[in-house]
Every structure is written in structure tokens, then in C-alpha cells.
Length: 287
Image 1 (spheres, rainbow, N blue to C red):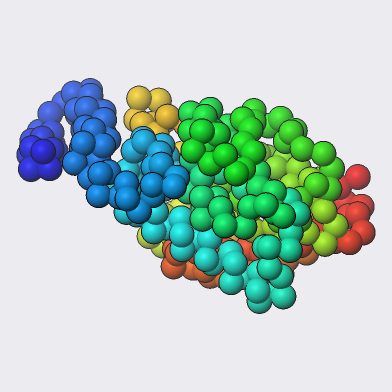
Image 2 (image 1 turned 45 degrees about the vertical axis):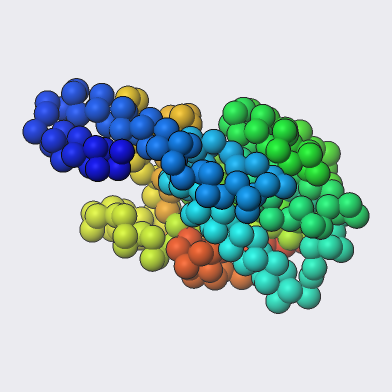
């Protein structure tokens, strides 16, 4: 099947644009079928306690449908967060409530199962399909569907720890400020927040020289990478690609949180990892 798909890919280059897009959609769906039929069985024994999400949900959270990268990157991300907490003399087992903000199909949260009990885990996302899967596959955590630009369904100062991996990397500045304020609201004083960004390394992989110049001038760049029929991930049109300068984070995000760490390529040697802390006293800039 892989050979057949590659032949179709090569032949599509000579087709008119509308037909190329139709073929692209067919190949996109075929890749999910290929993973389900020929590859997922290899990983069922490894994941027998928590079943794998379907390929299309895996693709939404990290741009690839294969089970191996889904599991590997999720596990490595969880390990990175644990190590960062230890550097700050914290341990997730001491926390009461932990939220995975923008959890998708629980790529990261599945690796915290052994901590459930004294620690209560929560996940939220606008993706109803992903939340439906997570509710069935991970009964140790509580999952909720959220609406875009709506208050998160949690009381003030609830969480000891919040992680938002590859979330603000897809939202424009207005959306980001809304959610930074919400994360501030639901985090306990002294609580920790992890967010990831597309830093210098990712910027030079994906941006043109003109786009890099715009990013340097403004500190942030929101790039519409795919729209309309070209957007195949099943996510809303506002979900695109965002890039941050380090100086922008230090300036803008410090109005919401104390910035403890910006680790370049600290997340899977790709995205930057930002570790934040909610001040013990309320930040007057938010009032």
C-alpha cells in the first residue's frame, strides 16, 4: 500500500490544482487506513492498558498518524515535564489537581496514570472526538469539552499544575491573551504552568526570510498555513501556526506569570518549553 501511495503522490504533480487537492485528501485518508490495518497491531500489546486513539486523532496532536511517534513523543514530553519540576524542587505526586490544557487524545496525560489517586488529573480540549476517546480510554482522569474563547469550566485557583503543550503555538495573539488570563485564574497561587512555543529553531525551519523579519519586528507571528479545503486536520480555521520571540514572552507573559525558565528546544529537541509560576499575590495588571 505504501508503494501505491507513493506512486499516486508522484503522479499528482502533473494534475490541475483542484484535482491535486482531491487526491491529497484521498491520500490523507488512506494514510489513516494504512496505519489502522497494517501498523497499529504492533503496538497493541504495549498499550493494552490504555487503547490507542485512532490515527486521525493522533495526527491532530502532532502531525503524524503512526503509533510509534505518538507514543514516543508523548512519553518523552511527560518525562521532560517531570524533570523540569524536579529542577524546581517539585514532584507531581505532591500535587492535588493537575490539568492538561488542550489535551487532545491524551498523548501526554496517558503517561501519568501511575500518579492517579492522591493526584487528580483533568484534561480539556475543543476537539469533541478527542475528548470522547479520552473519556473512554483514560477513566483515571476527568475530561471536558471546551468552547473557543469561553471561560474554562473550572473554579478559580483550582490547579497546582497546568500544562499546555503545543496549544499557544496555534493561536493568534488575542486568543493567547484570553487563555493566559484564564490559566492565571484557574491556577493556585504559587502553582506551575508549562507552555510550549515555536522558538528560534522551529522558526528557521518553517519561516521565510520575510516572515522571520516580520517576527523580529513584532515579537510574534501568526501564520495561516492551511485554510478551507487545504485544511485537512479537522480543526477550526483559527487553529494555525504561531511563532514567538524570547523577548516577547519575557515582556508579555510576565504580566500573567513569573517566568521561571525558557528552555530552547527543551521539548523533544524541537519546541521551546516555558515554565511559569503564578505569583502568590494577585497580579494587578489582570484586574
